[in-house]
Length: 343
Ligand code: 13P
Ligand code: SF4
Image (spheres, protein in one colour):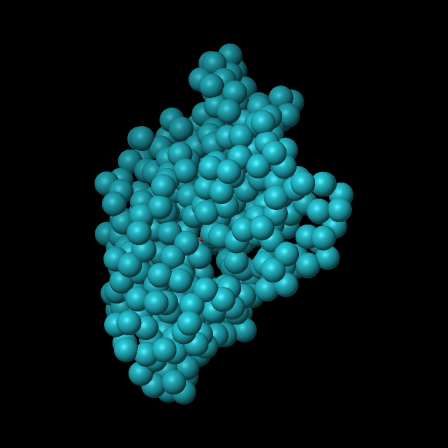
């Protein structure tokens, strides 16, 4: 925390257009605390030649007030691959920053808190992938981006929740097989299984945030909020997805809200998503039960400012691993069609 930052008239004036964006989710009394950091970050960013990539789960003051690019994992990877900036600050979790570093090995990639992990990434190692390859020789290994560089390096291709079905089917065609290994998210793999004739072999990894939702939660949302439309992320258990009206990646859920404009909606995913989407659609009634991702919530404005000031914490990837991991990510980028950026 910086104790010298003051909420002066100049800071208030320079940030008032940003407060106007978030006023329906951030109380006015809290704004000065955020505004001093928002202002300092936005002044320092161009001086450092930096861009901030923010995931849809970032809190509204980060997502709406300092981010240059916003989106789901796939959109952020695409932005990282094409940015001209020399410094990338990843407002997201570690695997996302690692993905940026793998795609841009010559750039400085910063994560404001190196402890921002992910239970899916922690569920599998490179050695586990080698064992799977021995057990199922010749089958393609499709790996969710929520994994370490080492795991990506041992895989044939990556996927995100935006493009998982397309990637799995493309790999099956290319390998001439009807069986595909999809790791490490068991629930995402089950969801893909429901949309393809292929046989999907999976792993027992779970997202600690989405696995906590239950089918009873969905029935309770419906009972308490008549007419509510239920949208769920595919990292949720199958019985939750069976109760939902629509399942998709974070950006697919945002896209559904934007095109269908339900009167009342619940996003069965991480908490900050509803705040960020509610800003865009103030006329929609967002029911807000949600689960917090403790890793995403490690990223705060003070840590982003410190990251820019000190150019820490730098994300490094062993170049030998990076080259192989990059091949898996680039193969995915060649398969998935671009999705609309949420900006
Ligand atoms: P998306 O790719 O849908 O943004 O999901 C990333 C994530 O970590 C969800 O928990
Ligand atoms: Fe990982 Fe789940 Fe957090 Fe996404 S929400 S970063 S999958 S722990």
